[in-house]
Image (cartoon, rainbow, N blue to C red; front, side):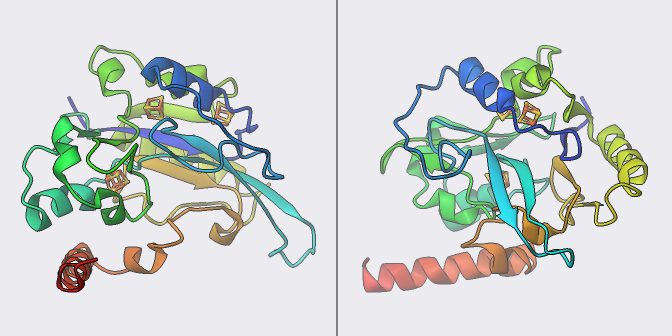
Amino acid sequence: MASSAILFDSSKCTACKGCQVACKTWNQDKFEKTANSGSNQNPPALSPLTRTIIRFNETDVDDTNKIIWTFLKDSCRHCVTPPCEAYANEVCNVSDAVRITDYGAVVYTANSAKVKDLGDACPYGVPKQEKPGAPYVKCTMCFDRISNGLKPACVTACPPNALEFGPRDEIIKLAKERLAKIKDRYPDAHLHDDYEDVSVIYLLTHKNETYQNLVCADHGKIRTVSRRDFLKQIKLARRITNMLNV
Ligand code: SF4
Ligand code: SF4
Ligand code: SF4
């Protein structure tokens, strides 16, 4: 089976959160206590019980001084060469914690519990664990569904087809076609620049800075270096932490 991908087309997303609900339902993840933070974004972040969220962001970075309200579906990007997998194998020497499946879905096993600070190895801050020593949790690209010929639950549930699923090359082609179609209406529309490295492709109507957590706030700078340097930085940080015994 060829590598697969998901397209998030922000020009179609209405922020209905149907994908969030479908994800929770399919994975039988419990609901979590949350609070009104003054935003429609709820819960406020990814967690072991919430594998995807719609992020809401208000900015006035445009020349027009108008407030821009954007929506972004955040989850694991299913990196083509996942830093989390390299970290588990090469830095922590834990094998079979992270599996890259035939479909390109990056899936965690129970062994992920043995990988300390796995969440820090992800440029997008995605993997979460309930408590230290517990397995890490994240989006699986609905591997259990796609390996049985179904689309991911979030894609199936999306009313305006803002989410599309299919072979990776076809999804990238579709993303480029959609980009050409919306360019008149959204002059700043673009494919997020990591699209060749990931299998969750973002077609964005506005500039990157109008989206919340397009890259994880803590890791944005690291994301701009090469994979090799990224791993070096992680190894160095790990060594210093061990030396300080913190
Ligand atoms: S279900 Fe579709 S339209 Fe609704 S929030 Fe998710 S991606 Fe957007
Ligand atoms: S987005 Fe993060 S968790 Fe997902 S495959 Fe990439 S590095 Fe791993
Ligand atoms: S692909 Fe599946 S696990 Fe991933 S966000 Fe969609 S519903 Fe959740």
